[in-house]
Length: 142
Image 1: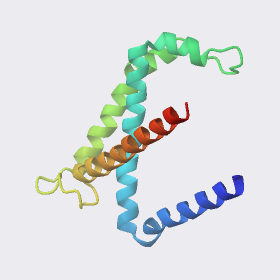
Image 2: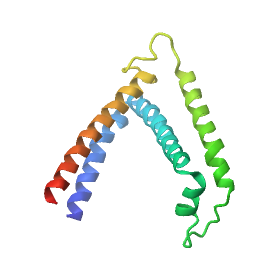
Image 3: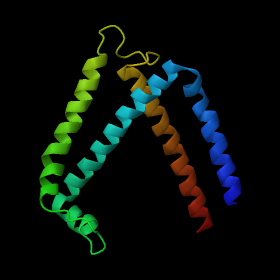
């Protein structure tokens, strides 16, 4: 099973990476879309930590007895103020860099908000459908 999974993973990686290897425009588009996606993902995580409570999160998950790093109260300040400010600044800067009154919404433009929204929406829809199917399979197995 492990060898089969390894072969499948290597094959899918090669096939899915081929367009980026063959086209610099495709590569740049994917770098743009998923680079922004990582910033958003980190922002969502930071927002979740803020909602849960930064100190509670730090004490429960980061200040454990097996942690060899000391995560002090400075972490709370960084998560509360610095991380949201940096995420907002980076996103605004990236959007400003690509703002074009004619094609900011165009999903076929390499660097546009439209291409980000279409690709993120597509992936979220696929993951949502997959999640429901996986949940149904798990429920059927008991």
